[in-house]
Image 1 (cartoon, rainbow over the protein chains, first blue to last red):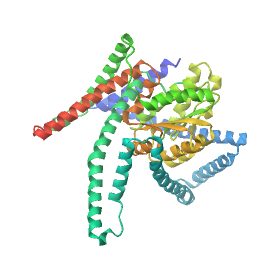
Image 2 (cartoon, each protein chain N blue to C red; image 1 turned 30 degrees about the horizontal axis):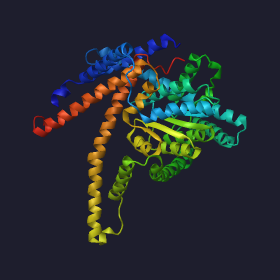
Image 3 (cartoon, helix red, strand yellow; image 1 turned 135 degrees about the vertical axis):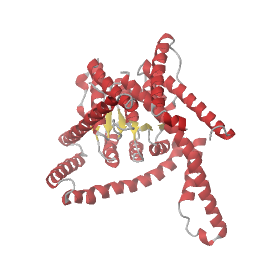
Image 4 (cartoon, chains in turn cyan, green; image 1 turned 135 degrees about the horizontal axis):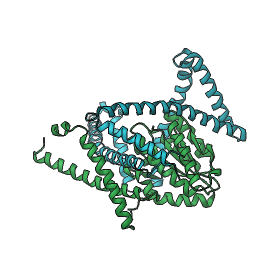
Length: 214
Length: 254
């Protein structure tokens, strides 16, 4: 049984923030209380970051102690984390050493992951036929190909008139697909997500979902 | 349009009050007249089966809550993820390998620890809870994905449930799942993430389907009531859009 006190606190905080959005002109004090509660949330989020990092360290420390074959990655993570923490604390986040770590380690690694992501996405689209070979899969792949043809430069088409007009046609089709069909579909999905978000928030306020309070 | 603008935030407040009222009405009505079936969503049917199989085979369920925060607009999808985490943990905690949760945000990580601990306590097996079952795997989108990949690959995971805010980096997770031979059931509130998941996951959850997880995993009458309310609002929106388009077509509304 979860504590009713935590639910009451969550209900009060949620209701105040919600009321602060809608009734700030009618009851100005609500706006101030809302700002205060949100400030607390920001401070707590910063503290949560520290707790999260400790959790990350603890998980990898346990892996090192267990001596698994992949524990070398955990050692690298722990050493990197401690070294970055010490250097950034000593040199400040905008110091030359801290920025060197960011520019020469973090950014290149993430950039290489993005490059890998591009390959994976192309492979995934082809692999989709294995999961679901239906009409929607064919539509999906056809749209991907049409958008690619319409948005990427087709070299050599400028010299041949027939190819040039084909390239223009692809551009028009791609534009029609993205501006009409994709926008309409995206708005439909976003409306659904917005309704779902309201439902999820109200379930928290009404106490049906309680991801807090143990 | 100008008339709507002068009303300010008032219509949104009315929508939320009506939404809450309908949820309560449907919950009460649902208790009086139970037995109305929900339409089948294939992803949830497969998820229920996957939970049973994980318990039987002694494999692990991996629930990823994404990298959205709890304060911003991405909170809704994370909250839906928590609801699924709770239900899956209840069903799969007796497995030899209990579920593991990953997150790319520190608050989500703490809340997932709290959800897991609370669920184990509610089931009377709190001693089974391990703090490492809920992990913060990274704080940037790509580091989060890179950190969650070993969990999928090395953790004897048979099913990945990705429910939260993800961008296109989610493809790294689905690819890790594919390589590990596990199935992936996934939904997100972000449009790029949904596009990727439609192609990359075995069972994608489109749009508001993500928020129906609790109702389909028997989380309680309020979950089913919220689903019915969603249906009412969805039809109301469709009607408003159609009437708006018609009004504009015949020139009544400019």
